[in-house]
Each structure stands twice: as C-alpha cells, then as structure tokens.
Image 1 (spheres, rainbow, N blue to C red):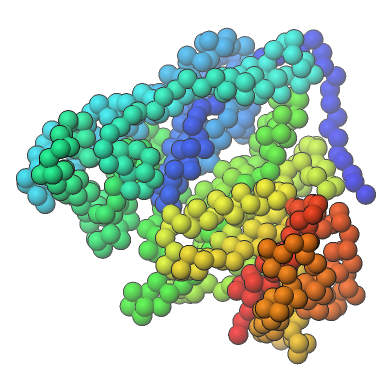
Image 2: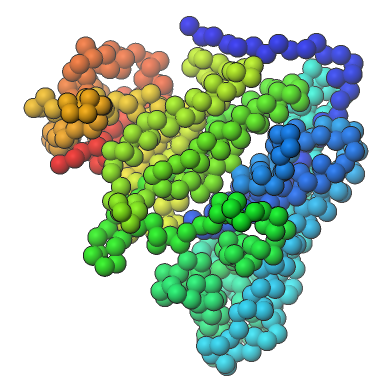
Length: 594
C-alpha cells in the first residue's frame, strides 16, 4: 500500500505571496565536467565549480535583507565548510532587483575565475623554465592573449526570479522556471583557436609558452621547431610538478600529454603550491586541507611493479534522480533548506568509505574508486558486491531523514528521489579516461532504463565488457545462487554464524548459458520475436530453488517485467533474456570464487 507523508502547508498569505526568490547559476557546468577525461581532471573541475559557487554564496551573504536558502548553512557554520560538492544552483530569498543581482553575481563569478586563472598562469611563468633545451627562450611567455580569452569567455551567469502574477502558490517553482527560460538565451562564446588540438579532449588548442605567436605553417622546419618546443615545455612542466615520478607516469602531468588551457587549469588547481594561492584554501585549517589532497593514481595499486602482479579496481559514479523536479515541488524556503541539509548530511556520511576513496560527494552527486592497499593490494570481489548491495540502504537513510523533517516521500513505484549508479570493475590496463567514460555510460544507461537502478559493467584489459542493469532490489538475487551440487553462494558460516559468500561453483550456470546459446535454445539478440521461457527456466533453476519459484512467477507479469528491464512492448522478451544473461555473466565475474 502506498503511503505519502504530506507536509502541513501553511496557507498562502499576501505576505508570503510577495516574497522575492532569486536563483543564480552559471554555465557551462556539464560541459566543463564532461571534458574531464582523467581522475585528476574530474577532481580539479569539481573543485573549481565548487569554488565559483562558494564565492557567489559569500557575496549573497553580505547583502542586507538577503538569506541563502540553498545550499543550507547551519547556524555557526562557515560557507567554507561547503566547499566540497557545493551545488552550482544557489537559491536566495529577499528583495533584490534582477539587474542588480545579475551584475553583482556576474562580477563575483568573473573575479573568482580570474583569481584561478592568474594563480595558474603566474605559477607556470615563474616556476617552469626551459632548463632542458636552451634553444627556446621562455623568459617572456607569449600566451597572454590566449589566457585572457579564456578568462573573459569561459562562463555565463543566469538569474531567475519569481513573478508575483505567475504561480503564486509556489513562488520557488516560478523562480526556477524563470531561470530555465533565461538559460535558453545563451549569449556566451568560447575562444576560437588554430593549430594542433589537445591530446586529452581534442576540443581546444594546446597550451604552450608561445601559443600567441604567429607561426607560418608552410615550413616543415617551423612545424618541427614548434613540436620540439611543445615537447620541451611539457617535459619541464611534468618534471616540475612531480620530480620523483617516472616518465609518462607522473602524478600531475605526463611528458607525452598536450593540454588546452582549461585542461591545464584543472590539473594545476590540485597542485599544492597553486592551491595555496587561491582565496578559500588560505582560510582552511591544516587538518581540513587533507580533504583536498588527491593521491597519485599509481598509488591505487593497479599493478605491483616489483612482483608484476596486477589488480582490478572498482569505479562508481552516480547521482539522485528527479532532484530538480523535487526541488520545484517545494513551496517555501523552510522546505528547501531542510532538503538541502538532508542532502549535505547524506554526502558527509557517504564519504566515510573504507574500500577506497570517494573523490567527491556533493549533495546527491558522487564519484569514487575502490582499490587495494599495501597490506591488501587485491580487493576481495565479494566485499565489493556487498557494498554495492548496501548502497541503496545508504540512500534510504536520506529518505528517512527527509521523513523525520516532514518532507514528502512517496513509498510506491515512483519515489520522489531515487538513486542511479554506474559501477565499473576494470582491469589494470584500462586507461583512466576509458574507465571514466565507461562510468558515465553506465550511469546514463541506468537512468535511461527507468532510474532507481544500477548498471554494473566489467571492463577487460582488451576493452571488451559485459554489463547488467538492474533495479536495486534485484541486485540481491546474486546471493540466491546455488550450484548443481547444492552449494549456496551466500549463506551462514557455521563457524562465525554470519552470512558470508561461499565457494559455490558459478561455472555451472555460466557453462549452461553458453551451451543453450550455442544451440539457439536461448535466442540471439538478432532473433525475430524471441521466446524467453528457456532463459527464465535457467534463472529459476539456479537462483530460485529455495524461493518456491518466486522469481519465475514475478517474470510472468508484464508490469514487473517492464520494471525489471525498463523495456515494454515487442522488445520485452529480448530485454528479459539480456537481463538474465547480464546477471549470469556479471555474477560469474564478481561472485565466483573458484
């Protein structure tokens, strides 16, 4: 039975109707994040976005009669405490003219970005000298104009306000809708460029000391000189930022990389000497600064250089579903503030993670890595599956917190806020940029197939992968496996009396699946009007022995089949087959212990 906790709404008085709400955001946020192809780039981009939001919040707090509602700030708390994972949409309440708000926060955004630009540019010019090849004179860097273009044209700000004649019962929704309308009127431009493009994204020009200089491209000699100059610059930059690292395996920048200005900035803001030149780092205590340190990726133990042992790592990326819609449904400042506090509390608890490191957890948005340690370099796959199975329970704590504060939470098939996650279990040779791309694709697939689910993708060193997208409650089905000999995959340990993974032989179901597919008893993906009855029988045989055919009964219902696969209509049978096959393939990779 569906239960809905309703908030006791106060009747809208003329005074509450006339309250002015203002929403501030900037762009391009998604593009800035998506162009991050390495872990350090993603981390640096997240820190930059958080810092820009932080500066806007600080400016809003200075205004008389203005209160910041979201992100919520607790009594006695500094907004500096919000810097990790600061949302890029700020909601304030109080009287302020739109033009004044636009001009004020545009200048704030520009000044904050300029501070980052100047810190990075000045450090490179003062610290990175051409000590390797004196043929190139880097005493005077000829790239000022290129940096200035990025300083002036990287961001655009938008301000939305509620209209007293529009949606009077929900002024916050009115302000949000006005913001979205204004975001459609994009006016900003990005710098144009000539020459070779970045090796990381391919979108922008390579940053190097004389990039503003007009070089004739007709001469092969000039082209060769240019290539040598760029090579010498990135070699010097790589050695300066990580003098003890190995060639092309350094913590910040590798010798063979060619970065654009924004890509270079994302790397440099994670470098301590440059971080200390940016305003908010100066006021953080030494103890709190540890939260901003990002280890070199080789420390994640993908390979032991001494023994040549290699290790798999887990990567997860996810965020809440329908958060924007839920915010639009809230009708007063108190509700928005309480919801913001709930998200912050969840993010703070989520970062208490002992299987690796949460790179960032800002509100409902997060990214993390599971890896081994010096004492235990090989991470146990079963404990990874246990953590994944418990992730939905962690999200449920957010919803419980919302209930306790009187916020609406639906308990039916369509929860107000759900969680979609992409999880990648990657071989040691899979490049970082590829792993992150797999994470994005896996998360997107989980959302596209209905939200409130997880996509597990096992990526092998050759680039091939197997995957399974499932609603969270069906992830537990992996624990129901029983092989032909009657050994259960997950049962009570007789010695410890605790539920643990056992040595059930997953090869039984894996080999049966292969045999049935080879004989076309289970139709291929290209089959016309395939039947899924054999696949369902296989599932029932190995995963349903103690459930009295419960899963088989569930899979006979069209509504539940749609919930399971996210597919309806003629393609549902094939989707069910793919779902069962994905479950077996992923289970064999993650749960087998043979």
